[in-house]
Length: 157
Image (cartoon, rainbow, N blue to C red):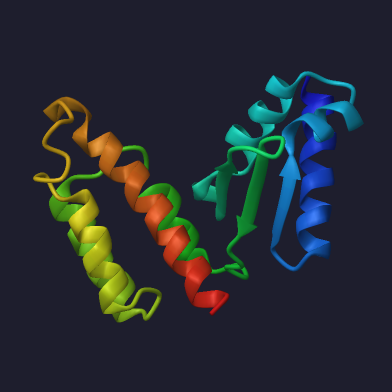
């Protein structure tokens, strides 16, 4: 199974490289191309094209289920990679998240508006419907996705 996953990942990466960082693909067409189930494509997308690795995936309904994959070019920015994987990790407290957002602002990876939007999205009042024991997990996932989205908009504006 990993062999087909590796081939799909390589193919998608080559498409992203040739299109300068962003592609739109149809899951079913890709599955037909590789003679595999659409669930195999989902597996590759969810395990190999994650926010930790600098990717944003958006699903578009209708028209055959198009998926947009965008890569943030972090050009070996070890600081940013460290923030996304180890710094945020799978769980992050509100205080630590706010501290990281200030660091990203100082390093000019985020602007004030993006910082404020992310703060609002990860605040305990926003997450009040999430059970307390899951908030730090949800906060981490939102924060990583929002930082990647902010960086995509910054690099493509």
